[in-house]
Image (cartoon, rainbow, N blue to C red; front, side, top):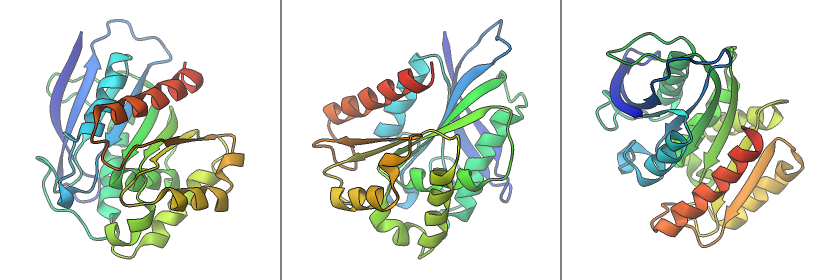
Amino acid sequence: MTTRQEIFLPSIHDGIQLEARISYRKIKDVSEQGVKAVIISHPYGPLGGNNNNNVVMTVEDFFSHKGYLTVAFNFRGSGMSKGRTSWSGEPECDDFRTILKFLANPVQINDVEIPKISHIIIIGYSYGSLIASSLASSQTQYTFTISYILISLPLSVMWFLTFFHSSVYSAHLNNLLSSVSTKVLFIFGDSDQFTKASKYKHWIKDNNVLENERWTVAELKNVDHFFVYQQMEVALIDVIKKWVDENHK
């Protein structure tokens, strides 16, 4: 039986309380290897993004049904998280690290007991994918392995979302590209309203992404940035399911 619960965690950036929704199965006998988990982040808060976003919840439900422990959290200023969205995104990067640190060194909160984690998939959608990429630059070592799913990375509006700190996030992406072991699923729609398919394809070509055996690129046909129709969500989950089945058995 899957349990879903809301908790609050203090951000390692400044102690701001962050709202997070955890879904998990209470397992009596967890193997020595532990359980798999995902952390899912949402689009830009000031434009209405939060962890009740349709893409966030669709991905959350998929992984929950596969037996993963899932955490869908709200960046500062979104949902019931305190504070406000920053200009640069730096505090939000620490918000994301807060959730990762919690799963790495769990403490019991309310009735939530986090088991040992064997692998975490970091999932970012839109603005969330930009912030998720920053974790690749962390020097912290974890006992579990980490992989990434980046959905609708907002390449063309990085300057707007980070107040002209695009170079910082380009560096994070380069660190992720240069990782010798991290697997990444990179997903974009060919009808994205913010980043044209040609922009994605140029970025992929310029960074030799298709030659990177650790990266999988999926271009979704007739899919926009918001996944407004159910068939768009279905196409997204089909790609994720195939990648997970091939890489995270």
